[in-house]
Length: 92
Image 1 (spheres, one colour):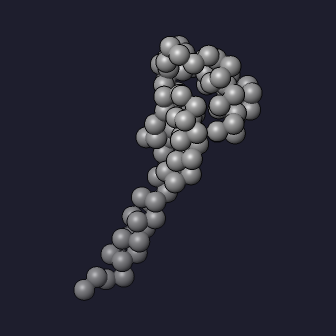
Image 2 (spheres, rainbow, N blue to C red):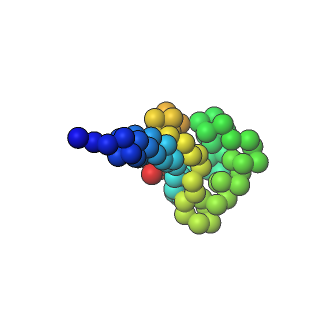
């Protein structure tokens, strides 16, 4: 039989797992232009133009950049949009 304290801890652990944030990582490639990457970040990830430009520069110089964080379910659609646009991205 589970005591009340164990039950509460179990429920807390479950909620904590569900709240774990994930992020979309965008990777550099030699194919897409800065303009295309910026446009797609604005469209798919609701970035401001400045935010999208900064992310595109980070991707270019560092090789990758986290472009959006949130629960996994909320990142699936924007990540799919980036992939369909020919960008290299994944959810981590």
